[in-house]
Image (cartoon, rainbow, N blue to C red; front, side, top):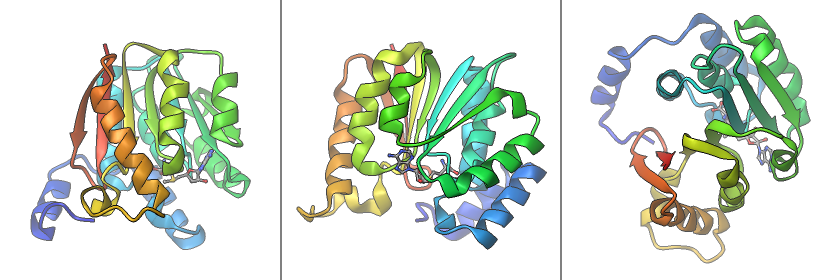
Length: 213
Ligand SMILES: C[S@@+](CC[C@H](N)C(=O)[O-])C[C@H]1O[C@@H](n2cnc3c(N)ncnc32)[C@H](O)[C@@H]1O
């Protein structure tokens, strides 16, 4: 979904940092070999994630929804010295491709991969987070929030992807559409929780940034 007319969108991309070579390679391989390549964050959002991570300089990052590892590598760019990104995906078929690119990167010793359901894995990660990126099944966004909020460091950042859900959040709700229903609940929850300051950015499919006060 383009929020800006295509010409302006192209201008924005042209005047933003270029996509690193390894990520170009990963993107190409994902589009060639993996189902649903549109799930990958892509060049522009990837640079946004990298920039936010560099501003935060996190010691500890949690990513829910690794897919082929593109956004994990973008977020890893901002890790502080000896920092670690924990990234979870339930699809075991993706593990090899993720691992291949993590190993090729400068962050190979700073990435911990988990294969399994994030709802089961998050409680087993015994650390607090400075940055969390939520980008898995929309129907569990509220559940993820409740699992991570007590694990956030003060000043920590929660990034939530696809919060505009191709514009469905402002259309009439189909009662059978669970994902949109949960996203509507989630967007209100983030904005109303007094432990957070939240801004919904109209980047790609909607990216919310919430700061833990
Ligand atoms: C949108 S993709 C993630 C894209 C990735 N963050 C990126 O930007 O390149 C969502 C991923 O979440 C994973 N996923 C869905 N439900 C999950 C769950 N309950 N636990 C862990 N991973 C899950 C899917 O297998 C899929 O790879």
